[in-house]
Image 1: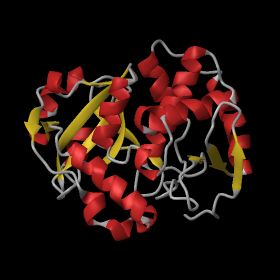
Image 2 (image 1 turned 90 degrees about the vertical axis):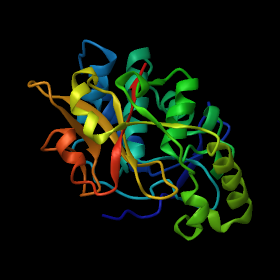
Image 3 (image 1 turned 180 degrees about the vertical axis):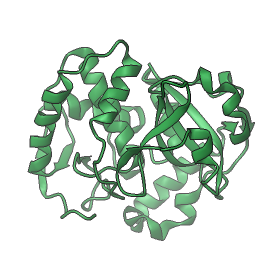
Image 4 (image 1 turned 90 degrees about the horizontal axis):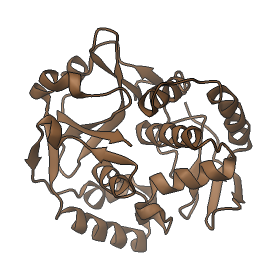
Length: 276
């Protein structure tokens, strides 16, 4: 499903950077808040799952952030990819926890999550690679990478997919953006990846909590993660994936995560980040 280009650009009182959105998103935000304020959860992890479920059926849409000629904070609640789904659920859940559900605070929270050190400073400041997303949001105190605790192992891998596939990213047509992304990738090359291998997940499944962020590690050259979503613990204790599925919409996997991953050809395991 495709949507018209987002044309509603405005300045948020608490943001120095522009926000790009559609007027429909402002209405959807208010409707979402009204629904979320009725939720009752025992813990933050349960809040994440409940918030995540309110997006069930929302269409999967690629490249929703690739809007306009310059980087802005794109807010789109009508169509989500796997990363923007995680970001929006985490932002809404954080607002609920603090009891502040106004639009400006939501925008500021989303910016903090989406950009390196919470600073929107051009295309390369966005956390494009999900392992850096986890690492940087860990430094912000928003999540904790628990993969090592689950028995994950260290992988050395050069992360340079964007630099070697420039034609796939419209913003990288700009030489300045391209050079800055190469610098980002050079820094990522110094970082290690800790991955829980696919064949070891079932043995530690009980240690994965409701609301944990699951990132699918990949064997694809130059890439760290291909997909992400939230762990959903079923009554029988099995973990399923609550995610914005490339198959069409936000949904819950019919099979447990372990079985779902076996159908993903390039998958080599998972990285698990626990929201704090």
